[in-house]
Length: 207
Length: 300
Image (cartoon, rainbow over all chains, first blue to last red; front, side, top):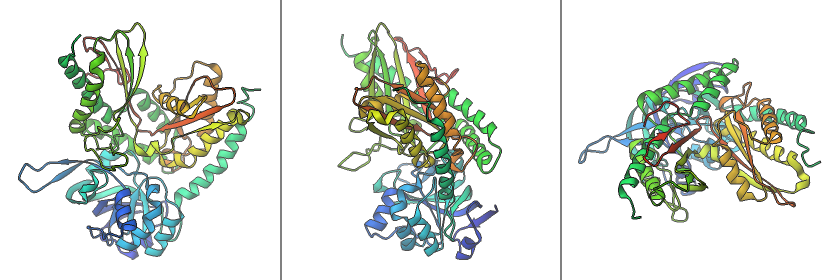
């Protein structure tokens, strides 16, 4: 297990250095995008209004607060921003990587075989920020550069965040086709069978 | 008796503060269990993840912010004393409290209108906040639970009707299958709520109510209590760990609630609460004094 400190834009060379189980702290551009953004870009065929080449997409629907006064240009602050369930984007993620050139996906929980293949094809990775730790993440976002597609509502819009040593990001899918959470799930399935076997005879309330 | 606008305003102010506090502070029983679980983990990613979780709870408290960005779709579970003097004012007060807390906490905008597919922007929508009502005889109090169930921990939710010959083993299989697939993404360690009844919607509702019971509490029926312990032990033996990264433990606990079933059906429901289980309970007296019993010692 190694720890990396990357700054966006991240190169293919950087991405090739990391493997599942490594930890990354990321500085630079992180843009939020979840269900509706993936739907619009992949199923809707619309171009992302944010240049994501070499950058990170964050599966997150934040709580944002407008801090600019009336009449001033809009300025926002991140109140709370943690990762959302990445698996919801499985259907569209690989095509999203191809369409946008995104290099790092940040979310929580695992993703499936389509995304794993997409990470191989596009030299990209999926990483996990600890779920539910949204204030820690918010404090690692030092600025909000702006917002796009706010018509989708606060959680679904693309919030352009500036991050400083954002992490820990645990690499769950690398560019070589390894998938940490899928590996874990195989272990869990085996142990589940044993656990169910152990319950036999304990639940015979109808007999 | 005419509508009491002053009572509505006092109730709405109190409930708004209650929601704001709950968004940033986990209940006493959950905090206690999480620190016990952290103690048990000493390998792999688990200790580091527990450290970030702890830091997050401390920062949410210090900065006065919602501890998770997903503050859930607002749900109330009200146990209303039949002698509570402000019955007419409860529902308008709860709706108003959600609007106020959305700005004050601030909460994320989480009410999306079905069919018209737009976010209402204030957490109030069609039948939302969802309010579950129960009457309590000979009581003049309003007992109110607020639960902020996020999307992640709502995804494993399910209900199905088994045939009786599938037995309680069929319930075990459904729960264990769901927890080792969807449960991995639901911010474990989760609290697992199971409802058993005669039809799907009753079982589903009971599974959610099971999550309102404290972590570590047990069903009054000794067989059900034993099943809770056996399920907890079985799920822990799988070792999901915090965040699904693996560990010695999997769940904060298993709570089961039941209603009599039909002779020909065995319905089961499953609801899960993520580790950031923002459940809050308060007992409100007719004069608006209160007991914030899930968060002892807190003044709103």
